Image 1 (tube, rainbow, N blue to C red):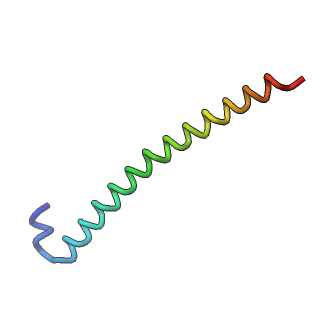
Image 2 (image 1 turned 90 degrees about the vertical axis):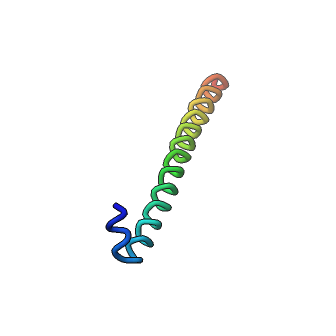
Image 3 (image 1 turned 60 degrees about the vertical axis):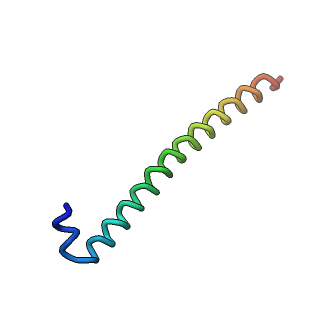
Length: 55
């Protein structure tokens, strides 16, 4: 890997951008999973409350 990065400065830049994007993507993927789970949990709770109060 170091061999390829030393060949051209653009390769170093591309690699840096790739690593930054990968870190951003991974952190957002984790947050999105949390948000979806929270939404589903909130929706289930909301449905349970509505069912209890319906005549």
